[in-house]
Picture (cartoon, rainbow, N blue to C red):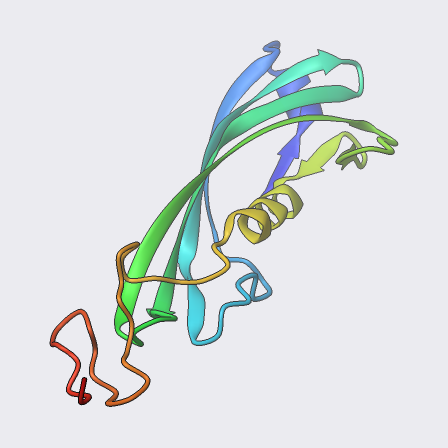
Length: 146
């Protein structure tokens, strides 16, 4: 997912929209029994802000599939994360241009890592599994003696 500023400059425009479907090379999700659903969708725009700088904005939509961390039910959830990044040569505080190109994969990987949930739930109100009798409390009542 390389965005080339030289190509944008040659087109005579200073802004362009982009859309990518992306499959990360490494696993970005650290939730046990959960995996990222490929492809990740990336949509946004790039604007030239100087001879060797640009501004990127857009959103990333990614899904996670796996077991709920409370009740172990197979589930699939989708998340949307916004991004807005100033990119320039030798940027000490953020993302840098390399040969007037931006590697959008680095930004997207960071965004997914930062926006992935800590625990993966089938529902925010998931009751989990009873530690005594092992029943899924979302489907049945506890069988333990009161």
